[in-house]
Length: 640
Image 1 (tube, rainbow, N blue to C red):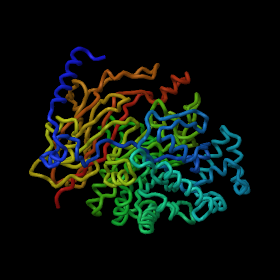
Image 2: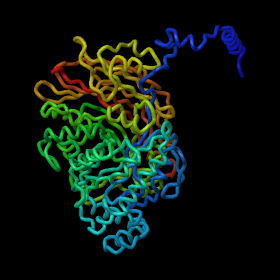
Image 3: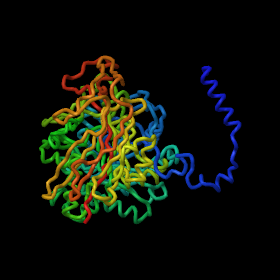
Image 4: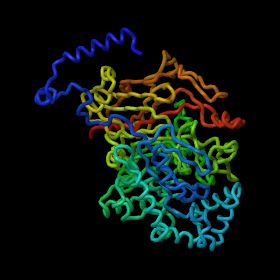
């Protein structure tokens, strides 16, 4: 009901509208408004909101997902991502809190379609002794099914699969072609330009010696082009684990079809130090001029966070960064046959790779690690869940249940990755002008993307030479951001004058999420002697906290109630903004900058399990965390 004051105001406004002179539209079109419209939203040519999506999801068509019991097909995964309620493989109703805007479905290409046939006991599989053994384990269920699945995956990673099975599910076989057609046509069926974008894609599953070198591939195109080819595999004799073989396939795809494709490097923390090679040699070849040029061309994007750990930074590599120890996994490879060393870590984490990219550019002329960033789930349940209170985990065997925390993700004689270490992460925000394959793909190519660990935090990050605090006095910092500088993922424009670069940053909390703690800028650079450095700057924060004598900003506080799996937004801020100038800028040094936004503390998914199932949690389980967003970097290169 309107108050007397609001009624009076309404009537006054109504009268003024009724008495106003109406300008004919044809006269307005001929006047000054055509050049400079009154509406600040008219004639905009830049992206106005982030589009939220997933770049890494598996259905029951993938070898490992199906072996662990996933019975859902691509149609189920697409419907779920679009906001529909579905029934999981364990019979549980599940739905996202909010639909996604786009997705890439990335089933493993090697032995694609084998798992559904294993589940049904196809005679050709049972004819092989190993195939029968896997089928009997799967049929028994429980621990036997888990052992069967792990044995199957181990044989895959060690390339000891039965030849007859490999041949029956390799490119050229009817089974392989049929499944690829199902994947392509399902994506096309669910693609709805302007409302939801369904990308055709796959995961190239290179895993030599258990070292995870996977890449996810996204096509810009529809069935007309995608069905002219079949995706590549890594198992011999038709495949190879060397990334050069993937680059050749991508090149051949574009040459043959006239389409376009791009690859995303998998989170590198189980790669045994092979994801970001820096020495002369690496698995499959040399880090030479050809390698850095091909990697820069085909891999402009990195999966910085996902269900198998966060890959931004590590405390061993960044001991001065108090927030570097976030959801790290400290094992060598998927088989747990290699132990982690500091040397390995340096070739697995994004921040170190960004620094090494500067050195490789100085040495070889191209920066192979000039990548944008995004988040993904890598879920093998067909369900892209990245929220702590709605987490359906990595595989069907650890979908919600009173005992799932007791199940290790991996267990071997050399170690274990406990179930509570799995991470409810992440999503990718894309700054694209429209929700279509072309617009989103092009945003990935120009690296205008950012990652979150699950929350849908709004994040703008621009770099230039003349931003001022006046640029923050607006509800659309992007207007100044694009006009005066460049967005995340770009190179700074040539230096203007003698000043240092300035950065315009704005962060907005997830509407149904937690308040924000702080905005940080992470800088990496190479000095005149070739040494690599990094530094973290707090540039905006909530409350009246002040930086202490030690240079550290005090903690934001903690409102988490473990017993009720809840928190209060009584601390933190709903939005934070900053214009920041690099106080240590040297125009002769190569550098990059990216933004990290931290939420206030909130409960991890295990706390919701404790509440809903009435279970006790392991003492070592982490209960509280600070979720975050990472922007793609902005690079500075000295004038030659």
